[in-house]
Length: 516
View 1: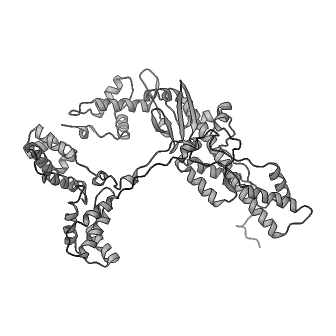
View 2 (view 1 turned 60 degrees about the vertical axis):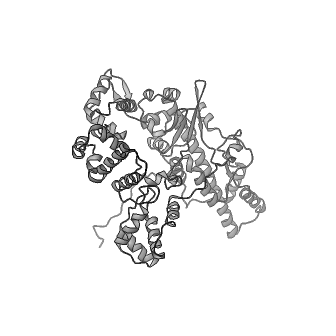
View 3 (view 1 turned 180 degrees about the horizontal axis):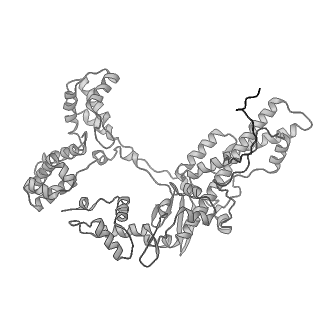
């Protein structure tokens, strides 16, 4: 007897599946120009059928395609409806593939034009050879008079635990464990603190501090040790040391009235003391030329370049650090020779596997070249639309001329999906005559003025920045006053919106902007 709970049914289901090419394109769109060459090198290493082009073949001019046929570029949207993928069960006729491939030889793709100046690429930037911050500390360690090799190892471990800002943020108990496991050295917290005190006298002052308060205290104590100091300067440093040692919380919150009462000083003496504190370096390692701060520097490589040529804006893609690509001639010759040798013969299994391997590598290379081409076309297409939308800004550089613009606006102009525009705008930069700008900074919501006009929130932020820059720092403006001033200028804005914009601009509240 059949189980009544079990039954079979037949149903049709429509599924969307991204092809490998579309996935590859989406990933390439997110890669900035600075790392594109590394991605291409990885593909060149992984696929022997792909190689850099050396001869001068026909250049595919992306800019010409977009400007001549704007809105209908051949670039495929990475988020559009995917084409149906061929299943593995479908039969593949090897002879048909060979005939089709040999007759329709895939073209190479060039990322640079023929007038590209190779001399510019060959110029190398000289790199200064300098000692690192930790090497500088170890050099000073060699000048210390330590008891034995054991103290030297402990001091060396302490220096190795100091971070790139110059702080020792590792607890003594953790350093004790490190010494025990790595060097079989036994020590105590008192000994570590004793040796740390010696290291804290190293140059630059403040090195080895465990927090900001201790860092500033060490620097002020170091200043007081200097000879031939004027009385007024010594008094200001002494007051500054008292503030940091005993009233650090009031100082950080700018409670100046409390500080005057507790120190029994007038406005002038307090101002001099605070000025001495503000001269100190909160990150001691940054004062060393070869310090750890150098390796944290990031150089921005623009993805687009806009040049003003007598009132006409010229947009170009920055492709100077990416090689030109093509299919390896040896792989093409292998297929051609197989086609000639197999006339009238039946291929054995090994030959078919070899040709299938070659086909797979060539197809992969073709996909990658096509993805690079589509990436360049999609990027140019998107940037061209942004350029036209914000034309007045790129001509003048005045932020007040920026129009409200959201991803949907550019998506409608280009015919691309919103997520594709987002991928292009993310982590991309454009070089203009007014500096290198982040692409996503051009996108902003709109704000209604009293006259009913729509203005960009970027314009409001610029005016807000100007107002705060011009305020009296002794009596900084509150968010309520900032709101009233913006409304007087015609911007209908709420106080909480002012607070939100101020936080986005990394501007502190009025109390923390106060100066003496």
